[in-house]
Image (cartoon, rainbow, N blue to C red; front, top):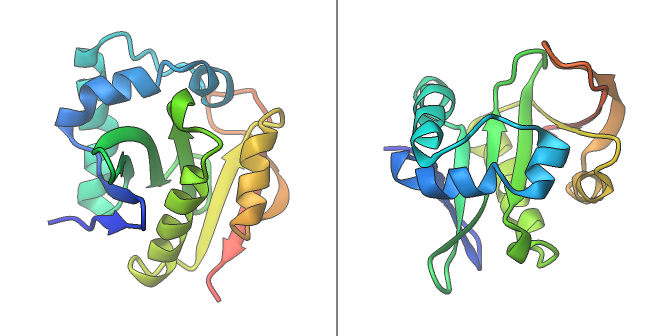
Length: 171
């Protein structure tokens, strides 16, 4: 029913309830907690509720949301990448995160690039945004490699951290 995307090495499919154990693990990795923030995902059951309340409604409304990234070679769930309709942003946010064992292997670029293309071609978005903390230089470099340009700072509702805002227009 919803679009799945593939690259040479990866499958990106909409996150579903069966991904709750993986989402619990991912959202509690040190880099997620440091750079993205504690979502209070304290158990697999809480992760399932998070998927039901945060990810699936957006998927149903827009046709896109969070995608679980699966490595083709062994069907291992290695990260997530998504197009998010975030409060406080005037546009759709491209976000990504990986389990530590799968960082620095080019998977983030591969996944984010296919979703960037899908945002413009499949979902017909005109603009794509991305936010990152000032300390997360790895994400900043990846966003620039994807063609997004720094366009200022922003603060999300109910958060005091000033984030870097990146932007790319559909040509």
